[in-house]
Image (cartoon, rainbow, N blue to C red; front, side, top):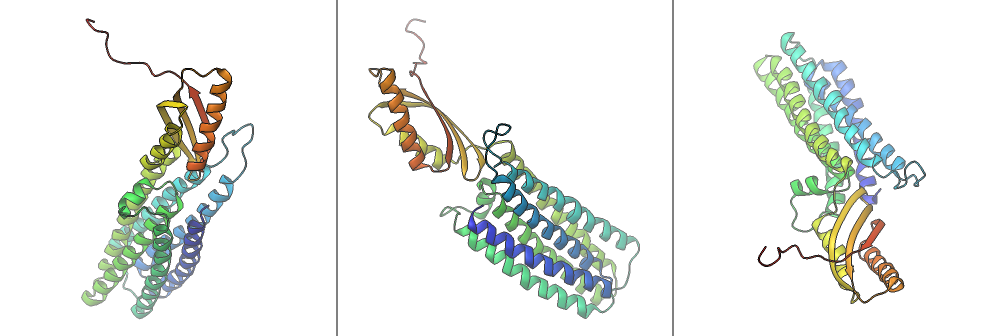
Length: 310
């Protein structure tokens, strides 16, 4: 795992663990639906950070006969599981709690305790989000928007932590707003509405994460920049006429499979072709270190134009 990913996950884990404990204690004191929904959210986030660390450890296992390309995809699998946990333990739990309190409203007790806990939670979540943003900026291409980064990043942990932290910050605002309106109006249903809003928010974030992780899990190609670097590293050789076809697939952020057809100098004999392939592979690996499995096939570029008079 990238060092930045590890730092972001550790910061999020301890922040969410402390927040979850505080929110549960706060709920027992205040009986606030929004606080309970947020407690469930923070507990789910804490478990999610543990799952991401577990997936990273599993993904480092060396290749074996059963998995010749290694276990890198485990990082994507466990990130997908995180989306499912966020959907069920976070989103659906908050919706259930909010709807239940909407049908059977309960006046919030000791609202000051809830306010203190929510404000402290916002501070801790801000620390976690700031860490995630800092570490993401270290790998985010210059000029790329945050949405593009989430959509295209091959590192699963950073987009997950970013979206979780953003969702947590917005969810805390919802909880704070619901509690405040409940206190001002004397109607506890506003607190329940805050819980429902948190549930809807978490379900949306979980769906976005699931879609993005599914793409990585079933196999995504390298970025356009990486593919261009691969093509250049091969085509720049005087023994190469042209790169005919290139396919790539990420097994993990730092493990890329590359399969390429190359039109070599037609005057080469078998030994020279073999040497040219070895040279091309060495240049490719130097240009793109993540290319762990490289397959170069010599071929001849055939014209696709129809014959004259055809």
